[in-house]
Every structure is written in C-alpha cells, then in structure tokens.
Image (cartoon, rainbow, N blue to C red; front, side):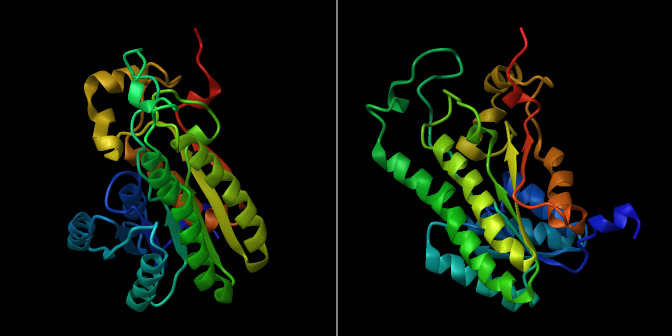
Length: 272
C-alpha cells in the first residue's frame, strides 16, 4: 500500500461531538471531504443541521443530531441514531467542550476578581467538569460499546495544552478538566488495546473558534495571544485537519495513548 493510501477514510463512519463549529467542525470537514460518513453531534442542533446541509450540498454524507454530552441517555441515543443512519461506527471524536469563563488574570495584565478561587461561582466549576471531563467519559463509554464487538476503531479526544501548562487568563476548571482527560485517554487506551481500538488525544493551543463567545476573534485579544506563541500566531481550525485525518485513519494504526500537542510551541515556554 502506498503511504498516502493509509490516510483514506473512504466509506468509514464517524461521530463527532461538538461538531457544529470550531475544531469539531474542522474534524468533520476533514473526514467528510475525504469520503467518510459523518454525524455532527452538538447541543446546538440548528447549527449542526445548517453545517450538515452545507456539507451535503458539497456532496458529502453528513447527518446531524442533538447532543449534550453531560447527559448519558442523550449520548446513548445519539450513537444509536448514528448507527441507524450509517450502519456502523469506525471513528469517534470526543470534542465537545465549553469555556469556563475568565481566569484570575486578564489579557491586559490585571487581576480578574470573578475568576479567583475564593469568589469563583462553584456552578462554573461543576458545569465545566460535567462537559469537559465527564462528557468525555460518557462518550468513550458508549463508543467502546459499539467498537468492541467489531474489534476495531479509532477514538480521538480533544484535550488541550492546558493539560500540561498553567494559564492564568483561562478559567480555573479548564486546566484540571483537560489534565483529567489526558490521563483518562491513557488509561482507556491501555484497556481497549486488546480490542484493536486506538484512543489518542489532540492537545491544541490557541485556535480561533467560537469558544468563550469567540473572544480570540477580537483583534486586541488575538494579538496578546500571538505574542505568547513561539511560531508567532494562534491558529486557524484549518490547520488541525491533517492531524485529525492522520489519527482517524490507518496512517496511525500503531499509535494509541498518544498526546499530540499542536500549539505553535506555546507549551515549550517563551524566548526573551
């Protein structure tokens, strides 16, 4: 087999949580445009339907389903609907996540009172953990149910470079949630290796998406983040598509439990 043929996902079926926008949509486009049958599972069903129709108009096979990953019954139903629609499950991207609000520091260099631990609203912590960590558990749990009998599958989880570094402008719950996700992936990868199910993590740095109300689209905020990136700027979701295709396909057939950082060198620290 030629090397490029190993990247083929033609005819495979994939479910992507948080698939209606941002990195999730980029994953979906990478797969659908290369012949995969894709379900966009998102809490915002209107956005998911809109993007699914756009991709169908481009000749792709795409379905949309509503999903709040914190809801275990809804997660099970979303997978059931995907399998009814496409017949099987080969690829899962556990991507859904939320921004927990501002951290204890703001990009302009001052303290943010609402983000400090002694005044932080516990509801912000609870909701972030329920989606960004427990939601991944819920997704992995159901994905394994469908993949184990077939003894094959690729699961890709969106973590963050925040799993490895501290970030004062990001809400407190985000870092421990993503650190938990990264270790959860290692544990589940070990468990599912016997069944030839691969579980890997993409750990992005700053990407211009709608998370946090799209605050990285603000030019002043973006410039502040650009200054922290050794490669000079935060990324566009287009720049994550090739990595997503690699992990979804047989090109990464001997890789499991990996944590692949894509952050322009941010987690390496700064020079000067």
